[in-house]
Amino acid sequence: MSNAKKLVFVTGNANKLKEVRAILAQGQAIEIDSQDLDIPEVQGTTQEVATAKCKRAAELLGGPCITEDTALCFEALNGLPGPYIKHFLKSLGHDGLNTLLDGFPTRAAWALCTFAYSAGPGSEPLLFEGKTDGQIVPPRGPPVFGWDPIFEAENTGKTYAEMPSEEKNKISHRYRALDKLRAYLQTLEK
Ligand SMILES: O=c1nc[nH]c2c1ncn2[C@H]1C[C@H](O)[C@@H](COP(=O)(O)OP(=O)(O)OP(=O)(O)O)O1
Ligand SMILES: [Mg+2]
Image (cartoon, rainbow, N blue to C red; front, side, top):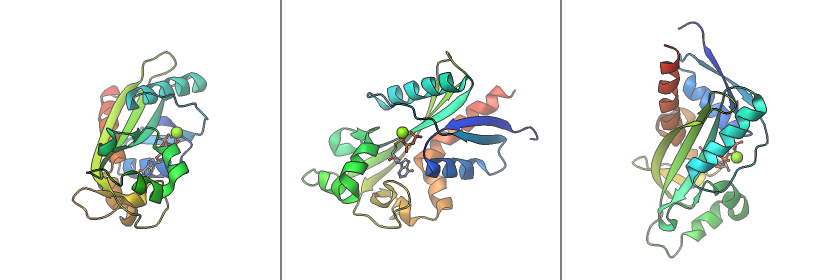
């Protein structure tokens, strides 16, 4: 495939951008440009948060774009902190997030990635979700990206932070969501 499709990924998070580029790097016909726009994130379900952010991004850009929202959901808390994990992580840190679950019968969690694609201003965003199950554990591995050190992915015995990036990028919530987005974008080219 020669003519790579160019997409603008609106995000302020350099680690997300790095992973998205790495995941899409394997001979894919999608090239990612990025823009760091400060877009307010509404409260609501992960779908509502993702839809509102992408709509606004497309309006500000005046063209097609993708956005991405990552939620970290605790089973014991019926899915919370979910899309609010950024603020929980900032306030409580890795240890505080662990303490939060003390006294609950389960430390099970899932990471949920939602890509939203808008074809342009006024065009309703489409959502592509990817989920990876795991559990919340005391931090292990280098604290490079968000809550990676406290999320142990199911059947791996490792936190995301303990994995080489190629390994995380094969099983991650982000990989799984991106796989669906990629499949959709390929249908647009036909
Ligand atoms: O794979 C991941 N492994 C560990 N931590 C992660 C991951 N992916 C997102 N994160 C963190 C970043 C932020 O603390 C929160 C999501 O919040 P979220 O609003 O989606 O991200 P953000 O504000 O950093 O970037 P953006 O400008 O795209 O909204 O979880
Ligand atoms: Mg954000």
